[in-house]
Image (cartoon, rainbow, N blue to C red; front, side):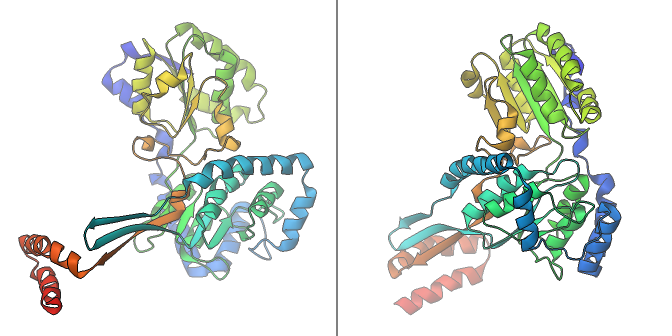
Length: 431
């Protein structure tokens, strides 16, 4: 990993370190638009053709059958099923209390205002497959959707070359009481859920991570004329670790590698107040890297990452808040005190024992998080993301009399006489 000392860097140098090149999708937008046009024109037939070309799978049906669900469950080890169900328990416990409550206020006598929440009726969830089928994402996105009360929950995930779906993914879906899974991956899956096809219904909001083509397609369908809501435009995985002299270099290296193995464009950063820690961590990275099956991928990610030496933890905190990482580990002696100054991070892990991988799978928090610096203004996925707020109000004659002077005056200040007259007509009718 590259090493820098903050005191030696100019403001331009710092700006370059804060930039995430892997989040740029401009170059893949034309491909995504082409796929969208194909799906719009050919629907199911286009999806089958794209699956054959891109996933090398020939499908007789896009939908996962009940028999496939049963085979998946039978083929899994008891330990794997137990782990999925155990993670489900933690996630349910943390997400159930997130359901928002109604608000009712009488703003003045005769004027009652309410805020109520309704679930998005049909949502689409994309589950990446390929070299890393994200079983955990089924739980992370499916559980809040179920708790929110969404009527129809649709999953899309790429098939294997034999036309099947990863058994762990199917078991996880079934464990949530859901069963609508389609064997479609990549950008074409997002297009299908946004447009609707003969098999896949059009949804109101799309969730789930994916590669740059998936992200590009989500950005397209979120705009007119499609106007399908999305959770966020998630980029490559990110981890920033703030460490002091108490940090264990083995643990720090292991956490950096856990995110580096996601992809060559993952962003991993170590910010430390102890210069001696860098050499120890680098040595551990070299040792532990050789033990990873995805060694080449993780190595390239490390080359793009960096270590930053700061004068103290407050300087580390300031850099972290500017970087706004997806994941932030506080591998320091007193993490709780430092945490009080954090204003921009997706998910924060307090203390060296709190590895980022616990949040990835089973601590209970959601691993669907803002990347690319968006944690400055966005948070992680919650039950509320699967719901929408609605306002209600009722006006009695007493409320009409109280509000009319203010409303008429403001309407005429805006030169909207029709607004004022809508009030006056009611005043005359109530006399």
